[in-house]
Length: 160
Length: 160
Image (cartoon, rainbow over all chains, first blue to last red; front, top):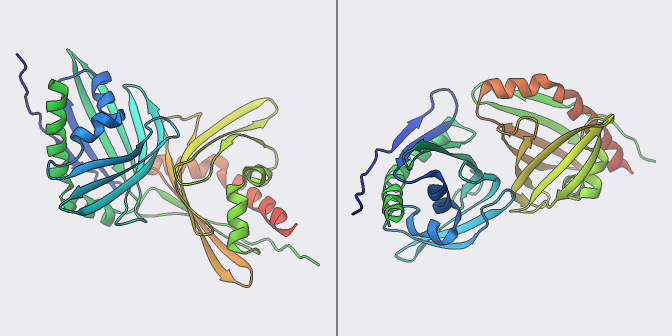
């Protein structure tokens, strides 16, 4: 029997620097949550809201690698790309991120995988940009729903 | 006859976000200044203060590429690495940067090459980190002299 509990996703705008922090627990060990972030075949199964389909162009998740993918819905395409600054298995991923609709906006993202024991993981993601206006627009863009829904899909993937 | 004038290097700590801005003009067109930032054989000739020797491990300056180099002085070694988020010829380079002595500190850097006409370029570099303490420690670390001296060496390279 497998039970899937949905944990709360905390999304916190930092008061001092233009950074947003996303915290979420998962009922799976760090190595498994990490793999769901690095194996492109798994990444495509849960990233973003259910209404978008993710097509990965390349996803070379290692220190010095890069990625590009396209989200599609009803013929609309949204491209995203970045590079992987540092990838330490089951510990941390540091990467850049650009939505190609705003090509001059770049975020520096860090995902930390924390072992809570008992096969559980706390994932803390931070996204840093160069202005509070940009950070607040990102938070107001509806990303919240995409993040929450994506993590629900990740719960389902991890429970299989 | 070639004359080399030394332009002032402005180093400005942003009051609102943890970012430092470095502005410098060069008596060479953007394509030439850009090439001195992307061709590893040229990069190694001017980056940093004269007292350090730069040994490039790899320097793949294109969108999605990465780099690593080591600065040496009297047997001491200082490693640096990062990835290239976006490289647009003679326009912009966006990259990440880590000094390996502080492996969890990552800066998001942007270099903008602005054509001033008459074979002159204004280069504006920004470096964004996730705390004011980290930014202020970086500015106080003596990086200022390395930047000024490096740009004097770049003047000499561009005048050849």
